[in-house]
Length: 218
Length: 242
Image (cartoon, rainbow over all chains, first blue to last red; front, side, top):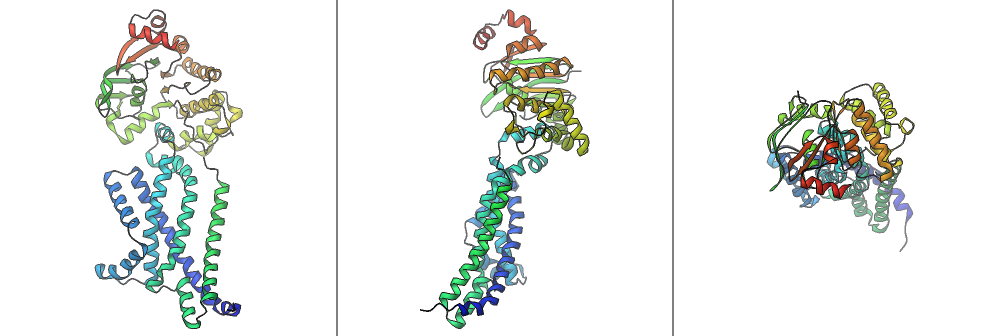
């Protein structure tokens, strides 16, 4: 068969639009996921019994169900249960937030607890409240250890956005699917879509590498 | 008024009793040396004073505040009772100066500049002004422990707790730490020291406490006790450590 480069050129504007949406969902989702992940992870590591139990249930429910079921639930079931209208894009972002948050919670918990407990005692012994010990002493050390695992999660979440094809969000994979359905150039289109994902994950890897290089892991 | 007062303090880890109804009063200015076999409860006794360990029974009053008062009150106790750990526990992401300035800045709430000034002063006091900008990993064990002493002193405590401060150090590095501790004692600081350094106990201590099985077995004048121990267990213990 012939590989028609012109097919890709013609599809480029649509694919770029899709890629932009993919980046938007991933960025918004991961920003929210980081917030929830830190909250849940710290609740697991340092919270009282109630906070710990809530965070534990959250992590287990989300880790134990497929993300595609989660987004279906948010998009189709939640409107019935809560009597609200949810837009596909909002559902997509919420799904990434909730899903990434659960995995990030475990990353945060693990890295905070991996910091030598003597440092926590040293901070407390100076007369600081625990939250300041976590913020000024343990946090900066834990953050360095988190970077490789967070990088993994960022890449997974970015690629997970492709699943939102099922609720009709016009992200990269959906755009590729629609173009393909019109011109039947599967080889060119899916190659181009794959390249787009590689460029995005590659950029992410590079940013993480640079961040890691600037910080010594102690 | 005593600065530290144990009233029938009991501490258990699960089923094991570590401190068994301990009564003990320490007056300001005393230099108390705590010795005893491993597992006798000496480190735990020290860690109860600044509430790093919670007591299970009795009461423990430090500088007029009960360790059971919780939250903010416990933090006040900790500001008055500086602690030095066996493993130094310096903050590895901070230079020596930042380690020492951390207390004044974040605990006492002083300005960045005042905290730095005090930190430099404290580092000078432990003989490490020239190492101010080194990270802990770039310092020897003895230097790290001296930075740790400066860090505790920078919060301006009334009382210093030392938990085996020289046990993790090579013999030739111990004396530099002990010298700093001796200088501190000569300034009149109240000190409670868990250690195996009998020479230090003899030279600097004003009171020697021998613990065994979660109880204070012997309590008296160091020179006397070390020269002529009456308690057979203390006698045996001293034969093993000296």
